[in-house]
Amino acid sequence: MASEAYDRDVVSIVNQISLARENEIVVRASVQFLKIATIATLAIVTVLGGQRFFDYAMDRSVAADVGDRVRFVVSEDDQPDEVGDRLEAAGLIRFPLAFTTEMRLTNAGLLPGEYTLRKGMTVSEIADRITGQTVAAAEPEVTEFKITIPEGWRVEQIAEEAEKQGLEGGYDAFMAATKSIDVENYLFLQDRPDRAGLEGYLFPNTYTFDALDPEYNIRLMLDEFNRQYAPDLQQRAQKMNLTTHDVLILASLVERETAVVEERPIVAGVYINRINSGWRLDADPTVQYVIGEKGNWWTQPSGEDLEVESPYNTYKIDGLPPAPIANPGIASIQAVLFSEVHDFMYFVGKDDGTNIHAFAVTEDEQNANICQYLDRCG
Image 1 (cartoon, one colour):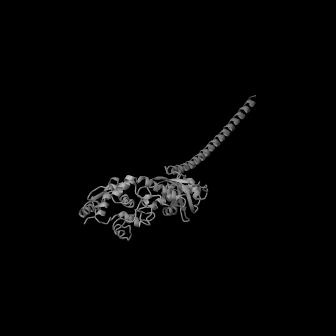
Image 2: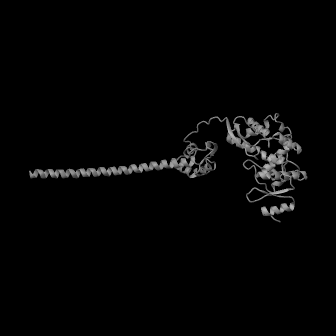
């Protein structure tokens, strides 16, 4: 009996030891599994978190301009870091590093071509588009768009903005329409000299343009000018022996000369004093109009530029240039018609970032102002 009890105890102990070993193996396996699962989960979170960061970086880079279309060109020699910098410059992304990292993660190559991207796209969407991973859906037909035309823009600048916003035919269609539109119904255009265009008459404002009809858009601006240039202003011009065309020429000079509204009647008074005294206008903006070119319409003229031969260069011609040099707003038109009466014949911009001018009656006073504010003495 004792022997049987002993045998049972031994078997029991062996079974307990075996069970403990099995439990240890299960625990070790469970711990190993949990480690692997944790690493995998962290990896997924990291990848998704990185993707969320890229998307966040993109989404936070835009605001009111979400949805605006941007033409973007990828050439054969482009590298991801260069493209990232250009995407940032175009306002499509906020962090170029997000784009280059996305390109490394996907290991996709850039596909040369011309793309229409929209502000508000994520980094991933942009990368997929310009690597050929996705194809853009057909753009819905744009029939109208909002456009804001600031005071002082020349016609070419309006044409560029209309093209950017979606005008069919773009810049060329707009410019052609300024020459082909029927203007017989606009009495204020009748006193223009032969061959004078619509510069000065396209009234600055915010409009809803027709994407398919540039002539309609031009009529919108002419109608707005007709509304703004009210009968009392027309009567004031007649009293001053100025045609509408003359008023707009002077107003365009004032518009381009100073951004300070309070100064405009003073600047207009200087120009009128020069005209009444038989002086040349010597207006820098007229030279800017001559030398301006696409991408830099209002470059600062050099001393050599002041010698350029042109009917618009008021350093070389007497009287007014043949047409306005920009499209002025109502404040500049009113500044001409109600210019300040004074004896100033000169002015110079203060080189202190204020955009304010110093005015002078005599040449000696002007030279003193130039010495004081521009540090050009002697």
